[in-house]
Amino acid sequence: MMKICLITVAVLVFMSGSVASQNQSQSIHNGISNSADAGYEITVLATNISNYGGFGEWSFSALYENENESILFDTGFHEDTVLHNAKVLQKDISKVEKVVLSHFHADHTGGLIKLRKTYRNENSEAFSEAYVAKGFFNQRYTPEGLKVGPAGFEDALAFKNVAEKEGITFIVIENHLEVAKGLFATGPVERVVEKYNGPIGLFISNNGKKEADIIRDDQSLGMVTQKGWVMMSGCGHSGIINTAKKLQSIKKMPVYGAIGGFHLFKASDDVINKTGLWLKDNGMTKFMGGHCTGIHATNTIAEIIGIDRNDLSHTAVGSVLTNDLEIIRSSVE
Image 1: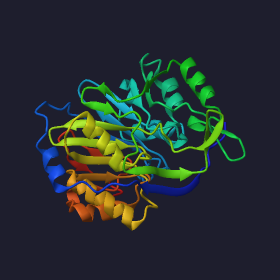
Image 2 (image 1 turned 135 degrees about the vertical axis):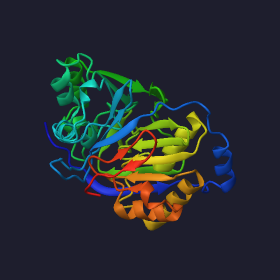
Image 3 (image 1 turned 120 degrees about the vertical axis):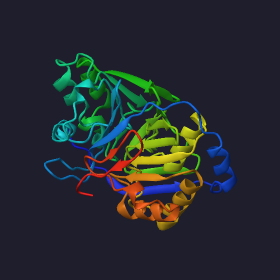
Image 4 (image 1 turned 30 degrees about the horizontal axis):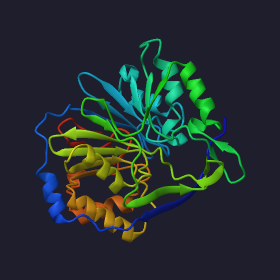
């Protein structure tokens, strides 16, 4: 298996259209559901920053927990990262049966097979369901024609076959799906505002023609709360605004919080400012920008919105969003 090296040129293109108005924001706030949320606590298990024995790497993973269920979002880059960090944080991940994968990149899929192998004897259903968006198994190629697939595999279907032999079932999402109470995987996200947000250099074959890969399989996870959506992205290659719009099409609520990677670390100030204004108009109150978001982008968006210091985090291994939506920072923050 080969490790993936991508050309890390950030491309974020805004398509035509105006930033949401304050009237839109008000109508969204008035549409908050009265239904109770499921009360998940979220703990970051993999991202760039760590200390006290944790492994920090260019990747992402987070654990959702409530009284009834434990769900993992993304699985880190190195196959041992999530395993190690969960032990350091004293998190029992043997109970995890469902995994939501944000997209095919190895820094989000690298740990899946090892996690399944490690815990299946303790729990036969551990890490047995993997939710992916349509296009996840599309074969990617370098300009030289070399194959690039998930989790360090060169061939995408080889990864699928190995995972299935280990007892993992892939659920391919074409629209959106409630994977657990109050947790919605977006499936593919329509590129309405941002056209693409991410690295360039890979290609897919479309009806026999080479086409630039803009990671159509990128998806996020939305958590329903009494205060609105809490959105989690692995890299946000579909764009944070597009993703928020997809969640609001599922349930008309403000986007109260965002956690994870949003690939703004190389975005222009103009793009960051437009993003911040849109998020402000649509209810953003808490921001935990980790992985590929970038500290400058996170701070700038927080300043535009006026996010309080207690509601802002740069998201290290061990950072927590409690079930009452309070941020507990990892000590390294």
